[in-house]
Length: 81
Picture (cartoon, rainbow, N blue to C red):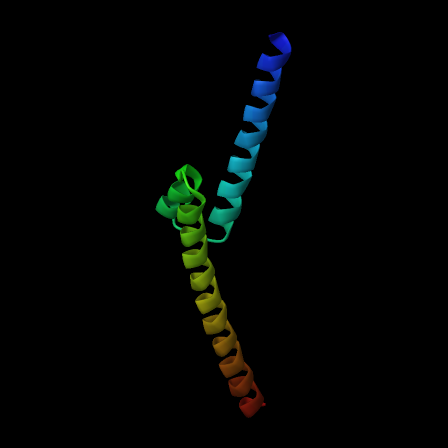
């Protein structure tokens, strides 16, 4: 019984650390807090997948915008020099 309780505690602690790491990683990627909460509390994999896919698409759009801006800056700076 003691071993079982200790294993439950360890596995709960491991899960807590994984969830905390996931929350920090998603926040670092600027996922909205409400969506992070939805991802972490989702009871099914499909809901989690949809939120992550939505955020993945936002990241792609942001990267594309940043690359276009960098291209414009490069052209602007090469024209002025």
